[in-house]
Amino acid sequence: MILLVLFTLVIAYAVNFLYKKWKVYRLLLDNFKTPPRHPIFGTLTIFPKTAPEIFKTLLSLIDKYGKNVVLTRPILDAQIIISDAKDVEAILTNPNTKKARKASVYQTLEPWLGTGLLTSYGEKWFTRRKILTPSFHFSILDGFVDVMSKQSDILMKHLKSMAGKGEVDIYPIVNAFALDIICETAMGVTVNAQADPNSEYVTSVKKMSLAFQERLRHPLGKSGLYNLTSKGQYQKTLTTILHNFTNKVIGERRDQLLSNTKVDKGSHMNFLDILLHASVGGKPLTNADIREEVDTFLFEGHDTTASGIAFTLYLLSRHTDVQEKVYQELKKVFGGKDEMEITKKKLIDLEYLEMVIKESLRILPPVPGIGRQLMEDTLIGGIKVPPGVNLLLSIYAMQHDPDYYPNPEKFDPERFSSQSDNKRTFAYIPFSAGGRNCIGQKFALLDLKTVIAKVIMNFKLLPGPEVILQGDLILKSSNGIRIRLEQR
Image (cartoon, rainbow, N blue to C red; front, top):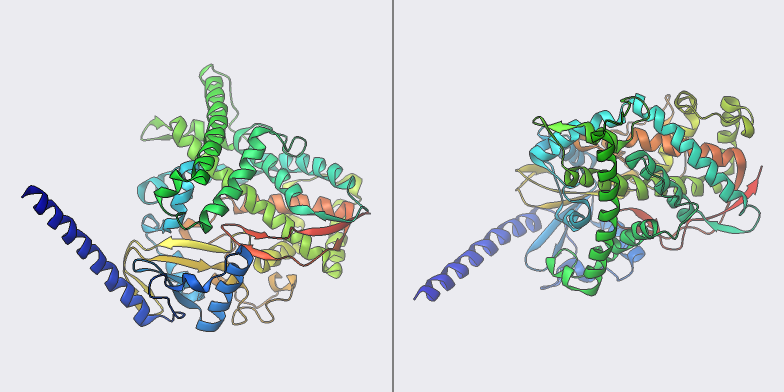
């Protein structure tokens, strides 16, 4: 009898759950355009198997069906792909940022990142954001510029050994450079990724990035069942290695502070030091709390920065007129390449280079899309969409939309001149926007300016093959980002 009652309750719960999903499913299908659907697999059957073809297909669906498109998956699952700037603005500028939550796909990052600033929401996100904002104050960034300049000099020596020797895949090279900077500014440690790319920590970071890409494309990727697969176990092993490293650094630094080793609260504090000085409700953050944020900063600032640098150099290699204008501006600000003293003030003076970087981030944004999960009723395209629905805000599609950018495929830095009357608003969001925008965008721009300035002062960039894009969490090229270098 008891088993019958329990069985009846389970069935009733399942029926109620599916009925609620069906109502939302029908609401989306009745009010938004959607491609033809398979009765079981939904729109999944439209997409090819390779990452570049998946990305290309997604963009073609937006072209064909409009700025807001519904895609479906098995068991009444539907999400909206949004590239209408008005709707993106409404979503990102919701004044109640505590009710902004990342889409469910981001939960796949939690085994490594926990619920740090990227994946948390509600009161925890609000408190952490408040703690972390001072980390990017201009006085702190001044100290970070010294690190960026030092690591750029190491990169220049590496590139000089490759100049005049044919095509170079620039991405893994600048990826190691970006990892060196992030580790030194985040944790105050040098991992020597440029000099020793085969160390356990460096290789584990690279492998983890690839492991996440594989998980996103796996049928069980969003499910806990993925952890039972061999690839899930492999990802768990990498997570342990990365956590052990971060835990060791945090523990050693905390011990230094407890033994009264002074840390100046000035420009040379790193991200970890700031977290170790922080408190919530009068209590210091635990080592686990700090690890979440340090690992999040590493993840968000490492691959994205490398993508931004590599794609900007790629575009400059294919537009020699723009490259020459950048070079002339650099000579005006710095003099000769042997006189390059990198300071934040001089980087700010590089106005044309900043326009170039912004245009590069428009054409090839490091983050091609942002996932959100609605926490309250939200108007999208005039339709009230209920909580629980997952959204993908397609940054790439918006920034290539001719409604927002005439001749969008043209690389034209003048779009971002102070005299331009082009009103970009929320059609340009390479760092997201609103209350949950990228907290490290000033850091990233200084990093990009520093390394690109040094590269252009030392080398002429010549084009290699055209990139084949794939849109994972980070925009990548499946055939590398290949250019040729000639010393100036």
